[in-house]
Length: 424
Image (cartoon, rainbow, N blue to C red; front, side):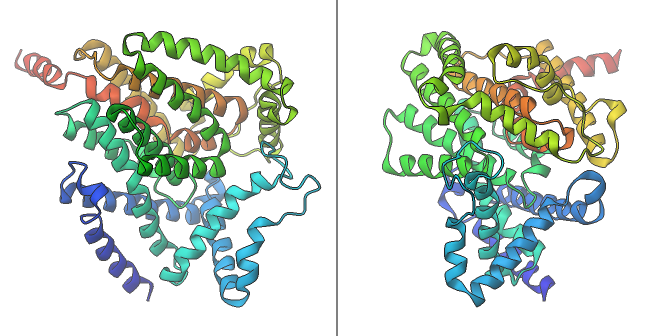
């Protein structure tokens, strides 16, 4: 039965991706849309396989845990619909719903998993509870994020559609981590659609009700699934919108406002104790440090909720998110792939420095991607000491960093240089 459902839904959604207006208006052909969809389904299946046969060693069992709890909620829906509809609003914590930034004994910290498994329980109605059929539904949802980013990037770089298309499907970690049944796919989709909404609203000079609704819903989704990702995205989008009003001073505006945001980050607690952001980061790091060490866990210095402590730990955070894993830290297939990809990115950056095309347009959007990506990488590095988890967390912003770089590389000149050397 599972195979029949899988093939039937795969064919149905392969047809559906060519009928959704948001997809068809992107400039992607029907074949390209199907290629992206099929690749995401294949990556999602591989993700599930890794979770079964490689899970304990590579710390990849979360996806099947979500599936198991989703099945529990699916059966609860059938046996006790009232409980199913209301249990997401209850908690047994003394503080109730007040600890929004809390990482332990917090309703809001639990909500991310609860919302995710509720979604899976809805999938189970159609899939009859089969994991790999749910992968098809999840891949279709996440396609909205990829298409949204594609539309932004092709508007920034006209005539570069093929390079952008190949980049979106050619970054292994991005394809892998955002295709499996885990939160990354939805988080990336929320980031991409939020950027899409603000980008085209800024270009058109006004927000339509559709873009406002899309922005609010997607920011809300990211806020629930991983609150610090949304908290960092809001100032980035706000700064971009201001910079677009004064295009010639984009870098100055981004630099100035981000200095202001850093000051506010350390001083909001004096306005409201509930907005003690440094303490929230320290608590999140402490929660990770308490987790039983795995193969990819590394020792790190403990943070304190002071500006000096954050400054001292910045090199450590950069090392964790940019340079790890080292070749000596290869323990399994996933860490090997991460090391290879990291060196490929270094090669791309060197090619960019060597042969790049002039780029004076869309600078403010590049600043948006860059400032947001750096702030997110630092946030991940300050809190997480598991290199495997870091690879998953940072996968959602890798396209924002590297696709603009790849697009700017002068590939024809590089090909000509290689051809010359070969002929010699």
